[in-house]
Amino acid sequence: MTLSAITTAAKAVAMDEVDKLMMARPVGYQYPSFAGNSPKAPSQRVHMLILGVDDIQRSAQFYAELGWLQTDNSNEDFVRIDLGGHAIALLSHAKFAEEVLGHPVERDTHPYKGIAFAHFVSKPGDVPEILARALKAGASLVKPVTRTAWGINAFFKDPDGYLFEIDYEDNWVFDEEHHLEAAK
Image (cartoon, rainbow, N blue to C red; front, side, top):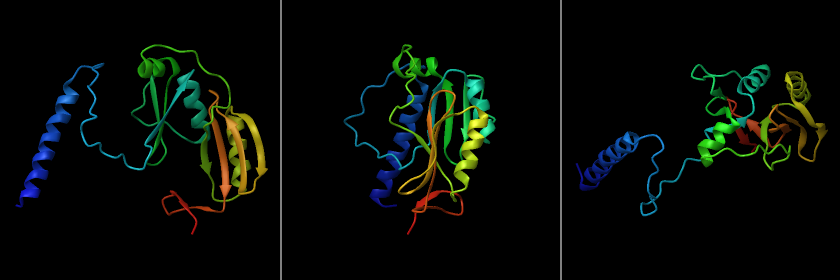
């Protein structure tokens, strides 16, 4: 075994010990800054989107009516919806604020927050069909099905005011696992 391989193996063992020590701390423990360490770059993925919602069961029902079902490891306080390698989580707005800030905050109810969830479809006719399903499930129409410079889209709000776009663009395609890719 080379010196480099031994050093790498020793670092891995040491890191396993660090991980174990970190997990042994009590809930609420705040770790000191790791700024002196060489930071590890995150992978180019967002794994879960967490939505603070007013009524978890109402929101779970809304997404179920869209066909997005909660996972078996969901519970009454935290609903997970598997999106095929990614997830949406539903958490009480008050509990989410408490976790992030340590105290509750007023809920911002303005419909435009400068962010939207986009669901791409493979053909233009899917946009009105999915919009109709969302509206039937309790969504609010924000923008009707519209021809755009890049394709066809529509926007709706879920029951908690989160903005969703349904979008068809011919410059995006799906691979065999329905992952989005730029067209070549």
